[in-house]
Image (cartoon, rainbow, N blue to C red; front, side, top):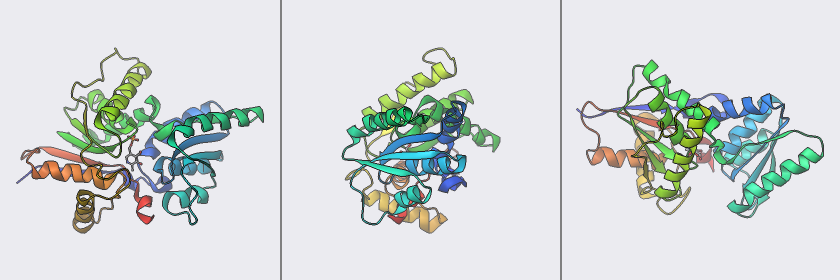
Length: 289
Ligand SMILES: Cc1ncc(COP(=O)(O)O)c(C=O)c1O
Protein backbone atom coordinates (compact mmCIF):
# COMPACT_ATOMS: atom_id res chain seq x y z
CA UNK A 1 0.00 0.00 0.00
CA UNK A 2 1.05 3.60 -0.26
CA UNK A 3 -0.04 6.85 -1.82
CA UNK A 4 -1.35 6.81 -5.41
CA UNK A 5 0.93 8.68 -7.79
CA UNK A 6 -0.17 10.22 -11.08
CA UNK A 7 1.95 12.18 -13.54
CA UNK A 8 0.40 15.14 -15.36
CA UNK A 9 2.15 14.94 -18.69
CA UNK A 10 2.57 18.55 -19.84
CA UNK A 11 5.83 17.28 -21.31
CA UNK A 12 3.63 15.40 -23.78
CA UNK A 13 1.71 18.45 -25.02
CA UNK A 14 2.21 18.04 -28.72
CA UNK A 15 2.95 21.65 -29.74
CA UNK A 16 6.59 22.71 -30.21
CA UNK A 17 7.93 19.89 -28.01
CA UNK A 18 5.58 20.75 -25.18
CA UNK A 19 5.92 21.85 -21.58
CA UNK A 20 4.15 24.19 -19.17
CA UNK A 21 5.11 27.23 -21.25
CA UNK A 22 2.95 26.05 -24.13
CA UNK A 23 -0.09 26.44 -21.89
CA UNK A 24 0.90 29.95 -20.78
CA UNK A 25 1.65 31.00 -24.35
CA UNK A 26 -1.78 29.94 -25.55
CA UNK A 27 -3.22 32.88 -23.59
CA UNK A 28 -0.28 35.29 -24.01
CA UNK A 29 -0.24 34.88 -27.80
CA UNK A 30 -4.04 35.34 -27.92
CA UNK A 31 -3.48 38.69 -26.18
CA UNK A 32 -0.70 39.51 -28.66
CA UNK A 33 -2.98 38.75 -31.62
CA UNK A 34 -5.76 40.86 -30.07
CA UNK A 35 -3.28 43.76 -30.05
CA UNK A 36 -2.42 43.01 -33.72
CA UNK A 37 1.18 42.35 -32.76
CA UNK A 38 3.50 41.11 -35.51
CA UNK A 39 6.51 40.25 -33.32
CA UNK A 40 7.00 38.40 -30.05
CA UNK A 41 9.90 39.39 -27.81
CA UNK A 42 10.88 37.43 -24.75
CA UNK A 43 13.93 36.46 -22.70
CA UNK A 44 15.56 33.68 -20.73
CA UNK A 45 18.68 31.58 -20.32
CA UNK A 46 20.36 29.91 -23.27
CA UNK A 47 18.45 26.68 -22.65
CA UNK A 48 15.15 28.39 -21.86
CA UNK A 49 12.14 26.19 -22.57
CA UNK A 50 9.97 29.29 -22.48
CA UNK A 51 12.02 30.91 -25.25
CA UNK A 52 11.83 27.76 -27.38
CA UNK A 53 8.05 27.56 -26.91
CA UNK A 54 7.73 31.28 -27.79
CA UNK A 55 9.80 30.75 -30.95
CA UNK A 56 7.54 27.81 -31.86
CA UNK A 57 4.39 29.87 -31.25
CA UNK A 58 5.71 32.77 -33.35
CA UNK A 59 6.51 30.39 -36.21
CA UNK A 60 3.06 28.83 -36.09
CA UNK A 61 1.32 32.24 -35.95
CA UNK A 62 3.42 33.77 -38.73
CA UNK A 63 5.03 36.29 -36.36
CA UNK A 64 8.63 37.40 -35.96
CA UNK A 65 10.40 36.43 -32.76
CA UNK A 66 13.32 37.95 -30.86
CA UNK A 67 14.82 36.08 -27.92
CA UNK A 68 17.08 37.94 -25.49
CA UNK A 69 19.32 35.29 -23.93
CA UNK A 70 21.98 35.84 -21.28
CA UNK A 71 25.31 34.18 -21.90
CA UNK A 72 27.86 33.57 -24.63
CA UNK A 73 26.77 32.17 -27.98
CA UNK A 74 27.93 28.54 -27.92
CA UNK A 75 29.89 27.22 -30.92
CA UNK A 76 27.34 24.43 -31.50
CA UNK A 77 23.75 25.28 -30.53
CA UNK A 78 22.09 22.31 -28.87
CA UNK A 79 18.77 21.48 -27.18
CA UNK A 80 16.40 24.44 -26.89
CA UNK A 81 18.82 26.86 -28.55
CA UNK A 82 19.02 24.59 -31.59
CA UNK A 83 15.20 24.59 -31.71
CA UNK A 84 14.99 28.40 -31.27
CA UNK A 85 16.99 28.74 -34.46
CA UNK A 86 15.09 25.97 -36.22
CA UNK A 87 11.84 27.86 -35.50
CA UNK A 88 13.40 30.99 -37.03
CA UNK A 89 13.83 33.18 -33.94
CA UNK A 90 16.46 35.94 -33.92
CA UNK A 91 18.74 35.56 -30.93
CA UNK A 92 20.12 38.61 -29.11
CA UNK A 93 22.77 37.86 -26.48
CA UNK A 94 23.33 39.91 -23.34
CA UNK A 95 25.94 39.22 -20.70
CA UNK A 96 23.79 39.11 -17.56
CA UNK A 97 20.26 38.36 -16.35
CA UNK A 98 19.87 41.99 -15.29
CA UNK A 99 20.33 43.19 -18.88
CA UNK A 100 17.53 41.07 -20.30
CA UNK A 101 14.51 43.26 -19.47
CA UNK A 102 16.09 46.59 -20.55
CA UNK A 103 17.30 44.99 -23.80
CA UNK A 104 13.79 43.69 -24.53
CA UNK A 105 12.35 47.16 -23.97
CA UNK A 106 15.02 48.70 -26.19
CA UNK A 107 14.30 46.19 -28.95
CA UNK A 108 10.58 46.86 -28.67
CA UNK A 109 11.20 50.62 -28.97
CA UNK A 110 13.47 50.11 -32.01
CA UNK A 111 10.85 47.94 -33.71
CA UNK A 112 8.03 50.39 -32.93
CA UNK A 113 10.10 53.19 -34.44
CA UNK A 114 10.22 51.10 -37.66
CA UNK A 115 6.42 50.72 -37.67
CA UNK A 116 6.38 47.17 -36.34
CA UNK A 117 4.07 45.97 -33.55
CA UNK A 118 6.07 44.07 -30.92
CA UNK A 119 4.52 42.28 -27.94
CA UNK A 120 6.86 41.73 -24.99
CA UNK A 121 6.32 38.58 -22.94
CA UNK A 122 8.04 38.80 -19.51
CA UNK A 123 10.40 36.10 -18.26
CA UNK A 124 8.76 32.67 -18.21
CA UNK A 125 5.40 34.16 -19.28
CA UNK A 126 4.83 34.32 -15.53
CA UNK A 127 2.15 36.97 -15.84
CA UNK A 128 -1.29 36.63 -14.28
CA UNK A 129 -2.58 35.80 -17.78
CA UNK A 130 0.06 33.09 -18.30
CA UNK A 131 -0.71 31.66 -14.87
CA UNK A 132 -4.41 31.59 -15.70
CA UNK A 133 -3.65 28.90 -18.27
CA UNK A 134 -2.32 26.64 -15.51
CA UNK A 135 -5.32 27.44 -13.33
CA UNK A 136 -7.57 26.25 -16.14
CA UNK A 137 -5.40 23.16 -16.61
CA UNK A 138 -6.17 22.10 -13.04
CA UNK A 139 -9.75 21.51 -14.22
CA UNK A 140 -8.46 18.53 -16.23
CA UNK A 141 -7.80 16.64 -12.98
CA UNK A 142 -11.36 16.45 -11.59
CA UNK A 143 -12.52 15.76 -15.15
CA UNK A 144 -10.35 12.64 -14.98
CA UNK A 145 -11.67 11.73 -11.53
CA UNK A 146 -8.53 12.90 -9.72
CA UNK A 147 -8.69 15.13 -6.62
CA UNK A 148 -5.07 15.20 -5.46
CA UNK A 149 -3.96 15.74 -1.89
CA UNK A 150 -0.64 17.04 -3.26
CA UNK A 151 0.69 18.43 -6.50
CA UNK A 152 4.48 18.52 -6.74
CA UNK A 153 5.88 20.82 -9.44
CA UNK A 154 9.12 22.53 -10.45
CA UNK A 155 9.01 26.27 -9.76
CA UNK A 156 11.15 29.21 -10.83
CA UNK A 157 9.52 32.38 -12.14
CA UNK A 158 6.43 31.33 -10.18
CA UNK A 159 3.65 31.46 -12.77
CA UNK A 160 3.10 27.73 -12.92
CA UNK A 161 2.83 27.28 -9.17
CA UNK A 162 0.62 30.38 -8.83
CA UNK A 163 -1.66 29.08 -11.57
CA UNK A 164 -1.92 25.64 -9.96
CA UNK A 165 -2.69 27.14 -6.53
CA UNK A 166 -5.35 29.37 -8.07
CA UNK A 167 -6.77 26.46 -10.07
CA UNK A 168 -7.09 24.28 -6.97
CA UNK A 169 -8.93 27.10 -5.17
CA UNK A 170 -11.21 27.77 -8.15
CA UNK A 171 -12.05 24.08 -8.67
CA UNK A 172 -12.57 23.55 -4.93
CA UNK A 173 -9.74 21.04 -4.57
CA UNK A 174 -8.15 20.64 -1.12
CA UNK A 175 -4.74 20.19 -2.71
CA UNK A 176 -1.38 21.31 -1.30
CA UNK A 177 0.77 22.56 -4.18
CA UNK A 178 4.44 22.04 -3.38
CA UNK A 179 6.90 23.95 -5.56
CA UNK A 180 10.43 22.61 -5.79
CA UNK A 181 12.70 25.52 -6.66
CA UNK A 182 14.96 25.19 -9.68
CA UNK A 183 17.23 28.05 -8.64
CA UNK A 184 16.14 30.86 -6.29
CA UNK A 185 15.80 30.72 -2.49
CA UNK A 186 12.36 29.70 -1.23
CA UNK A 187 11.47 33.19 0.05
CA UNK A 188 12.21 34.78 -3.32
CA UNK A 189 10.04 32.27 -5.17
CA UNK A 190 7.27 32.54 -2.57
CA UNK A 191 7.05 36.29 -3.05
CA UNK A 192 6.97 35.91 -6.85
CA UNK A 193 4.12 33.37 -6.54
CA UNK A 194 2.21 35.59 -4.10
CA UNK A 195 2.57 38.59 -6.44
CA UNK A 196 1.20 36.62 -9.40
CA UNK A 197 -1.71 35.40 -7.24
CA UNK A 198 -2.53 39.03 -6.46
CA UNK A 199 -2.46 39.77 -10.19
CA UNK A 200 -4.74 36.79 -10.86
CA UNK A 201 -7.22 38.02 -8.26
CA UNK A 202 -7.50 41.33 -10.05
CA UNK A 203 -7.59 39.67 -13.53
CA UNK A 204 -10.47 37.47 -12.36
CA UNK A 205 -12.10 40.31 -10.40
CA UNK A 206 -11.95 38.34 -7.14
CA UNK A 207 -11.81 39.78 -3.65
CA UNK A 208 -8.17 40.52 -2.70
CA UNK A 209 -6.78 37.58 -0.75
CA UNK A 210 -9.17 34.99 -2.24
CA UNK A 211 -6.38 33.00 -3.87
CA UNK A 212 -3.60 33.59 -1.35
CA UNK A 213 -2.56 30.62 0.69
CA UNK A 214 -1.12 30.98 4.16
CA UNK A 215 1.04 27.90 3.47
CA UNK A 216 2.66 28.80 0.19
CA UNK A 217 4.99 25.83 -0.05
CA UNK A 218 8.32 26.27 -1.82
CA UNK A 219 11.21 23.93 -1.12
CA UNK A 220 14.68 25.07 -2.20
CA UNK A 221 16.51 22.04 -0.78
CA UNK A 222 16.91 20.35 -4.18
CA UNK A 223 18.73 23.07 -6.14
CA UNK A 224 22.04 21.37 -5.35
CA UNK A 225 25.08 23.07 -6.88
CA UNK A 226 22.87 25.41 -8.88
CA UNK A 227 20.46 25.95 -11.75
CA UNK A 228 20.80 23.29 -14.42
CA UNK A 229 23.48 21.34 -12.57
CA UNK A 230 22.77 17.71 -11.76
CA UNK A 231 22.76 16.69 -8.10
CA UNK A 232 23.02 13.20 -6.65
CA UNK A 233 19.29 13.32 -5.84
CA UNK A 234 18.26 14.55 -9.29
CA UNK A 235 20.39 11.83 -10.95
CA UNK A 236 18.68 9.16 -8.85
CA UNK A 237 15.22 10.57 -9.56
CA UNK A 238 16.01 10.80 -13.27
CA UNK A 239 17.12 7.15 -13.38
CA UNK A 240 14.11 5.99 -11.37
CA UNK A 241 11.62 7.70 -13.69
CA UNK A 242 13.45 6.56 -16.82
CA UNK A 243 13.87 2.93 -15.75
CA UNK A 244 10.49 2.35 -14.11
CA UNK A 245 8.24 4.41 -16.37
CA UNK A 246 10.31 5.45 -19.42
CA UNK A 247 9.60 9.00 -18.20
CA UNK A 248 12.21 11.57 -19.19
CA UNK A 249 13.25 14.35 -16.80
CA UNK A 250 16.17 16.81 -16.94
CA UNK A 251 18.37 18.46 -14.33
CA UNK A 252 17.17 22.06 -14.75
CA UNK A 253 13.65 21.51 -13.46
CA UNK A 254 11.87 18.19 -13.54
CA UNK A 255 14.46 15.75 -12.15
CA UNK A 256 14.95 18.11 -9.20
CA UNK A 257 11.21 18.39 -8.63
CA UNK A 258 10.94 14.63 -8.82
CA UNK A 259 13.78 14.33 -6.32
CA UNK A 260 11.71 16.49 -3.97
CA UNK A 261 8.75 14.17 -4.45
CA UNK A 262 10.82 11.01 -3.90
CA UNK A 263 12.32 12.43 -0.69
CA UNK A 264 8.84 13.18 0.61
CA UNK A 265 7.60 9.70 -0.29
CA UNK A 266 10.58 8.13 1.51
CA UNK A 267 10.07 10.24 4.61
CA UNK A 268 6.40 9.18 4.87
CA UNK A 269 5.00 12.62 4.00
CA UNK A 270 2.35 10.99 1.79
CA UNK A 271 -0.11 8.70 3.58
CA UNK A 272 -1.75 5.51 2.32
CA UNK A 273 -4.80 6.36 0.21
CA UNK A 274 -3.54 9.88 -0.47
CA UNK A 275 -3.21 10.99 -4.07
CA UNK A 276 -0.11 12.73 -5.36
CA UNK A 277 0.25 14.35 -8.79
CA UNK A 278 3.69 15.02 -10.19
CA UNK A 279 3.05 17.89 -12.62
CA UNK A 280 5.64 17.18 -15.33
CA UNK A 281 6.37 20.60 -16.79
CA UNK A 282 8.37 19.36 -19.79
CA UNK A 283 11.81 20.69 -20.60
CA UNK A 284 12.82 17.49 -22.35
CA UNK A 285 14.88 19.21 -25.13
CA UNK A 286 17.41 20.27 -22.48
CA UNK A 287 18.36 16.62 -22.05
CA UNK A 288 20.11 16.79 -25.43
CA UNK A 289 22.52 19.54 -24.36
C1 LIG B 1 10.52 22.61 -17.70
C2 LIG B 1 10.17 23.72 -16.77
N1 LIG B 1 9.61 23.40 -15.60
C3 LIG B 1 9.27 24.34 -14.71
C4 LIG B 1 9.49 25.67 -14.95
C5 LIG B 1 9.11 26.66 -13.91
O1 LIG B 1 7.93 27.31 -14.25
P1 LIG B 1 7.69 28.79 -13.75
O2 LIG B 1 8.73 29.63 -14.43
O3 LIG B 1 6.31 29.08 -14.20
O4 LIG B 1 7.86 28.80 -12.29
C6 LIG B 1 10.06 26.05 -16.19
C7 LIG B 1 10.34 27.46 -16.53
O5 LIG B 1 11.08 28.17 -15.97
C8 LIG B 1 10.41 25.05 -17.10
O6 LIG B 1 10.97 25.36 -18.28
